[in-house]
Amino acid sequence: QKEVEQNSGPLSVPEGAIASLNCTYSDRGSQSFFWYRQYSGKSPELIMSIYSNGDKEDGRFTAQLNKASQYVSLLIRDSQPSDSATYLCAVVNTGGFKTIFGAGTRLFVKA
Amino acid sequence: KAGVTQTPRYLIKTRGQQVTLSCSPISGHRSVSWYQQTPGQGLQFLFEYFSETQRNKGNFPGRFSGRQFSNSRSEMNVSTLELGDSALYLCASSVAGGSNNEQFFGPGTRLTVL
Image (cartoon, rainbow over all chains, first blue to last red; front, side, top):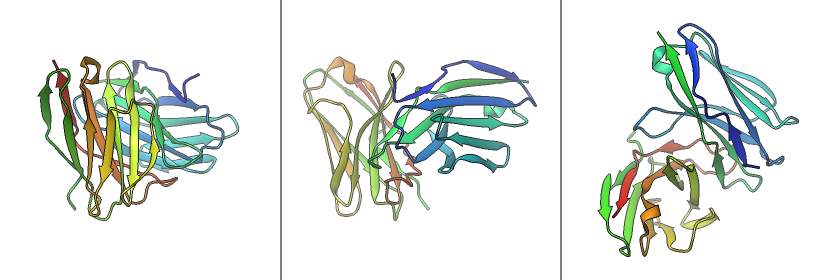
């Protein structure tokens, strides 16, 4: 079992729709979770962090965390073509000094 | 505030050589992590440094090593290069690492081993 799993996609959604990206993790003691966006040929950039169960909203982005199910998700509302990128889920391990990244989900937003 | 910088941006080496990559974190950030990114394996954690101490290490052979200086700048070294070491090497900095590890990535160093 991979430490952090994501569907590789590609996930294709029409412009204006909600994109839903999912991630599961294996380290039950993890406390910190992040979503990064990576455009082709660029380095990852942080878009959301979440530490507590529930939802966290920031503009068009909502991160959801369920520690009991070891599940993290990212919702992108009103998706735009500029949101087309690879989205990486990242989890800090129990020891706290190692961040594990999922393989990423490629998102395409069709105009 | 300046972002994370990495030098060089591109490197071409041959098998058996060694290479040193450099990373300057955002001012005030004391934690530096290194990652290897390849199309097949994604982002793989190499190691993390804080206050000149390596706090964690990923599953890479001993040919991969690193260090951090008192000004938080970090270097990583790969000795006896192999073809499979061709990758994008990314460094990321954060204020203190640990659980609140919001990381900011540099542009990366693209290493090609021939």
